[in-house]
Image (cartoon, rainbow, N blue to C red; front, side, top):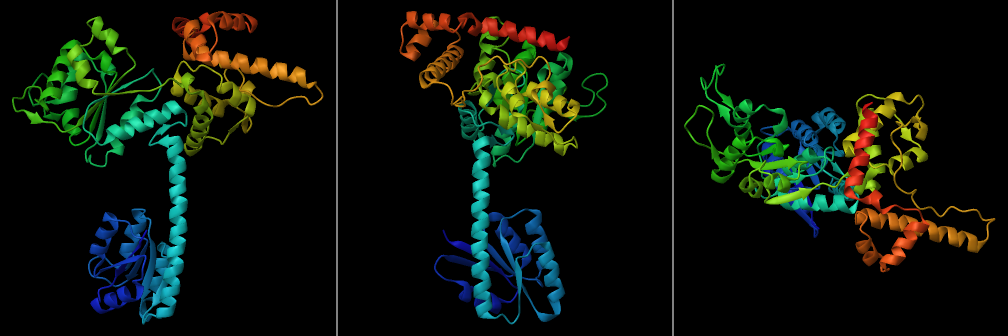
Length: 478
């Protein structure tokens, strides 16, 4: 890849000379004659190196360096200076310039310094690229996870971000549906407007229309001035409608009309106002059931469900628990709370709990432990008493060398079989026929193994898991 160099000097002669000296295969040299133009070009496209004079028309060289650093542009800066401005060059170094060259320029030193600067910049770019790729492995904007389920979510968010279609985000309470809306919004570089969020469950029906569409002065008692609604405030951006399943039917009809016509009227107004915002809706409700029961409009459901993103509950991505724990610990330190680490036994217990409250519950538990743990390490005994492991201990190859091989082999075989069966039962919600097909065994063989390992298939039925979660929530509320 060509390394791009930008020369900034108000002298056309010096700019031309530097361009000739620096132009070699593998380099692309551009010359700007004022600081304003140079900054515009730096923002528009990536450069590896900038050589700039300090005395420039428009913004000065020092101001240009300050703007480059303020905008965090990944470019190396070399300052060109005359004898009277050496002090300014030192000031430029303090602002983050790589080095400086005095005029008249020593061509040999110029070539050596440019080569070294480009080599260092290439190394910095490689490190930045590696860090970026590592972050992408575990995160997408504010969403965190390295499990396959979360990788699927990241990929889906990335695919829909650049379109303006409506998106329906589903998932249990506490899974991070608003974070998905934020990721969609901030991934779309074409959107210049804001992200506006509305909790439909928190608004009384008589206020919801005014909140969404705004109102004119005198539209109702107390409307002493015109007010813009969320659709108007989100022009060119994203409107996030949380808990959309709680929206009253009368309001659903008005929302449907706006989505169809791409325009709305303020309460008390007659002038249609075009809307250019993208709508992202979220719910923890089964909208298909709500439609069947007459609590949600079928036509609105199809209008919202152009693209759907389903967030997995935390119990289905327990591999992400250590990553989330470390993230929450860092966040708490940034808030001024004491730094803590989590002991292995505590982390093992956290990674085997069912988390009915999902990621939000995990965050609250970590904050509680940070506040209440007297030492610097959070051990298993520091966890709240309701954090009871419901999953098998992760498989380990630690063993006693003094034991016979056959005895160890039998034990490991049983541990592997039991852990495998538990995972498959979880996946198929306790259905023996589907488990047998997955395992390549007969129903009778599966049933015999369940009896041998004292595994109750009913523990994996959806209604049982839900009632167990309810019991745990009731316990924590007492």
